[in-house]
Image: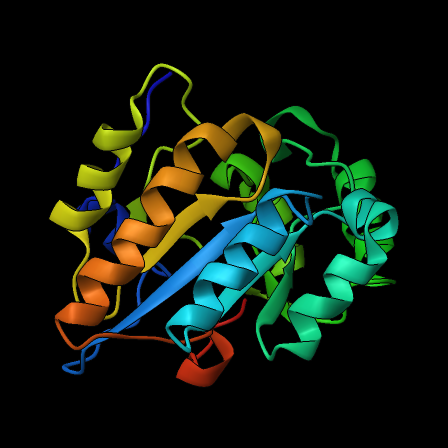
Length: 214
């Protein structure tokens, strides 16, 4: 499994039509959570965020919203942000456009948001040209790696602590696969950066400027 923990600046420059981070001189971090809601992981995340008056952005799967509507509503009630992550967690590189767009549309019927994160970060150019007309596409600056079963929880923690800076968009996952690592890492990340005077905001609060549309 090949991926970057810290997204290289050259990738951000080449694909500048995506949002990778949110430049700021303030001590603000944007924690994001993909693939939920999840019956165990999402309530845990919400409880941990509450301890620090922290807010996060949850990129939800439509099918999971339908399975756990009360947890999804709790995300909203506690003033976190939600985004569209497709209905079935489709890989854009392996999915025909019509099927991909229909899946996003299906998710949008239950996830009211103009934010979109493609599963695996994979979109073809033709898919981006269409999706970009309706959504602000949010990628990331730092991957915790919590989805990687080959990594230790401590390694995931160090991934975040060593690479996060003001304005970073950091990715965790509220999923069964990531649970063993995420539940160790997130509390320590919140404690570490809170002690350094950081705040944790939603993407929406950042008032992200949408990259130029084509």
